[in-house]
Amino acid sequence: MAAAVTAAWAQRLAGVRGLLLDVSGVLYDGGDGGGTPIPGSIEAVARIKQSGLKLRFCTNESQKSRDKFVGLLRRLGFDISVNEITSPAPAARQILKERGLRPYLLVHDDVRSEFEGMDTSDPNCVVIGDAGDGFSYQSMNEAFRVLINLENPVLLSLGKGRYYKETDGLMLDVGPYMRALEYACDIHAEVVGKPAPEFFRAALKEMGTEAHETLMIGDDIVGDVGGARCCGMRALQVRTGKFRCDLSPSTSADCSPCILCASFPCTPINQML
Amino acid sequence: MAAAVTAAWAQRLAGVRGLLLDVSGVLYDGGDGGGTPIPGSIEAVARIKQSGLKLRFCTNESQKSRDKFVGLLRRLGFDISVNEITSPAPAARQILKERGLRPYLLVHDDVRSEFEGMDTSDPNCVVIGDAGDGFSYQSMNEAFRVLINLENPVLLSLGKGRYYKETDGLMLDVGPYMRALEYACDIHAEVVGKPAPEFFRAALKEMGTEAHETLMIGDDIVGDVGGARCCGMRALQVRTGKFRCDLSPSTSADCSPCILCASFPCTPINQML
Image (cartoon, rainbow over all chains, first blue to last red; front, side):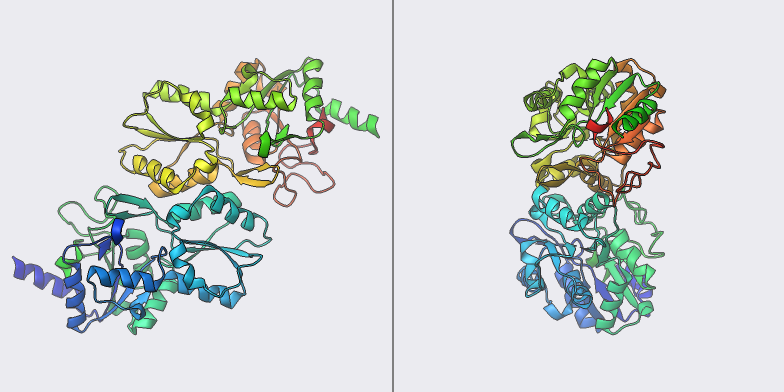
């Protein structure tokens, strides 16, 4: 039985040269004290690295700078370094720079260092990330007032996830707060991060693989699986993290084929690789 | 000129037997210390009452109970009593009662008394109002967790306004936060309050006039003007409160005819009545 499973996975991975891994909900669940690795995921990452497959971590993490995020993951036991991570804050910084934008930063304190040195006086745009407890009425209202007073309001959102899972339960992500500002000002945000195609393409470029030979693995059917497949990549959804049988069209409890990720059944990462 | 203006208004009001008045942005702007009456509005209310027109105040106020709201308005100088007010919290209470719902109340502390005595244990729905500073990440997450764990999530929203004006600037209203929860849980809220037709019809019933002989006056082109006209009422938008020339299709700076409220130019209430 185990051999049959292995053979099935080997077939599914045929032609794959690179892997993009989501982090939260795939490798670990955040929470008090930093969070907890998902059983088997530390070993899965090690096996991928030994296998010769190219590997990059493609995350919408916007509560921490890359330095802090990698520090946390290393403490949890993962073999990971800053230059292996594609995350939205540096991509947003690049956009701000190119377009001469001065941001109001509605972001978590731990991610502010990614915007260090940028001019934030007299803001002419808003950058919104997963600010967590920083999403007070006052901070939301300040961001709203910046936007409503601009002739051409620009709202850059570091992802658009609905929620994610921490060890003590589901947590609102940046997406709902992005929607709140969109509605208040009757505008559309520009999403930096998954599922934006530019973001996946940047990750592919950094890894040096083509879309068709790359597999994205994540727990978000829209941000991870849908986004990657829109770029021509293969994708599959794990059954850990925020995965919920009743909400996802991708699986039933017995792991029937996924309507989005085709023939891949969905399963924890440690059973895939 | 003044006589011509008066004659024009008399013609516009021909056949009108009842008035529904929005309050915030029409009669006063809220803010520190309770707020400030809009110049001339106290006298306008007095003139309406002397004129023999029926009058009712139709507000989406959801930061205060009717008692507290009326207390504030009376302190500001308005001739107004609790039984002249149609507001969403009592309407929501009625719905909860009829459907046997136990609410998680994401509302301002000052409006909780409207829900006194209701069973809020083990909630099977969420009621969201203009909670102001009560919109913390924690309270939003609690509401989200209630909804996401329900088989049939019910979100009752006391209005869906985008923002309103206080003396020191524009403030986010309940609508953006309603949208945040809608997006997080992939659901649609049931709006109790303007522009819901049931709410306008309840106000008409309480006042005892027919839709075609009733005029709604407000500062919100969607919640007040659009909602009332959908119910067959006449409506006009004042140029006070949240009114902004650049956002509203209804007027130009020189008060050209309103595309929504037909022949009525938009103007402060003290110049109308």
